[in-house]
Length: 344
Ligand SMILES: [Zn+2]
Image (cartoon, rainbow, N blue to C red; front, top):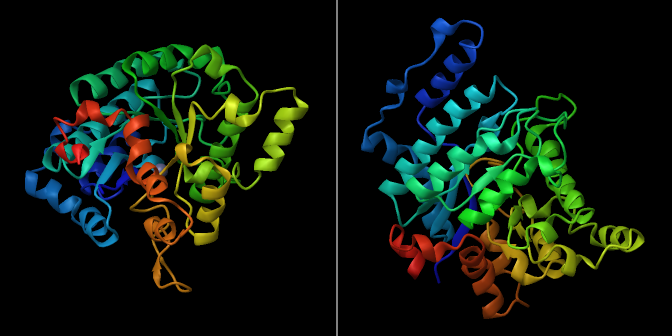
């Protein structure tokens, strides 16, 4: 069975990409520092070397295809202007496209959007459309808080976001709700800000009629859905108190969770609480947590092991988690010509 990991980032990009970003940021104060795109003319060999470790992990862990996006913390939409974010998004998305073209059976692209705090998300439509229509990408990462931990923009359920959702629906691609680096020293980025972002998005969806307005819009909440599965009773109860419909009716035709939870009991909870149809296999490899768990001697982010060990799952459940649900949510059959492994 082809195993699809729906959440991987290009954390291993060639070093000059960091240099480009540093110069781009320096140019905000001193335009003479502005980098040239020529800095990023990597050979195929350099590109292949940059994903060698990612491919090795895929082989070792028994996963096949990664739905691959630019480094999440690197998006840092809070830096500079919308023009800064657009240039940076184009550069990062083009490199994802290079990887997906070199290894079409291993990587499928998802894009970063040129969001910027206080700027209407309509400004993201052009880059989203370019990535889906020209580069063959299957979705985007949507930052619910472009300010990086200060939450200065309206909630995801506000009409502020609707033009972007209209385009997602028209293109028939999902968004993964994914914050970026934290600019607020109260929130560690991967330890607090990411999980806050996931939980916040879930509660925003619960209190709104967003999916009545967009019945075919699909959102993936990563990192196992933040705190939502663990506190499922609280969310069911809150929905009930607010006279909202039951969660499955309200959200589960549109909202999905990935399996980026880095211990067995956590994944078991996710698998038992959330319907199997709403769970997509993922590891967020390489990079959110890099070490080896001394209690198991395996990498924390080797999430396939935890699902393999869940012996109550049926073959059909596994098929859905490891590939069927991702195929459905990302409409992967559409890119089977470009990525033949999807057809397996
Ligand atoms: Zn991520």
